[in-house]
Length: 235
Image 1 (cartoon, rainbow, N blue to C red):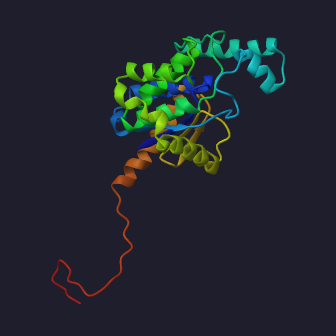
Image 2: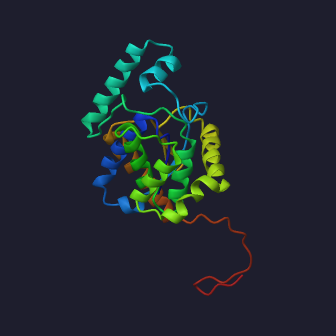
Image 3: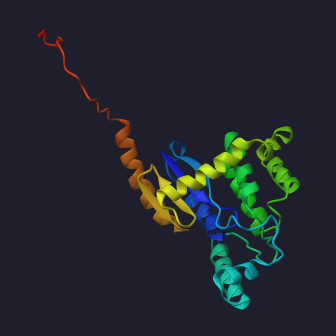
């Protein structure tokens, strides 16, 4: 069963949501039958590659609140993150356009390392204060998760990865996604936001039972003609 996740590496709730989902999956007997597919989404595509502003400063302008209020919002998010073992340092974050990071995620997905790349980028941005639009930084992060150095540059030069980013964003618009994280289970159930792990567990269980049932069903649209049955009747 597929779980698709629309996410942005600069979204603090996306990192929290990722860990809550992973906690929900930890003890599932059938977790090896669940495929996680990361989808690109940009919360603000208008941000230049480097913004000379703090996260709180950017947030205050975006939300039209004071920088002090922005800091209070971020402090609350940091507390939530800390409760699940994540260490946020908003004072060190480098505001930047995430498009190039998404290209790298698309490349990593082609090497079956999408989740590892997401995790490394989240930590780089929220904990380490790295510039996730800097090509050299991105190459180093990709190497750290085991991607081949001589192949990584394709993420930034091959147009297919840019196309995949844009395609994911357009797909989100078609689905009615207006914010991230957004989780789609088997294209039947949606979970919006960084929900607690038990919300993920309950929805996954329901979706998986239905998915499993559908795997054993074969619904054929039969055109009847002359045939013989197992009791020897032919007509």
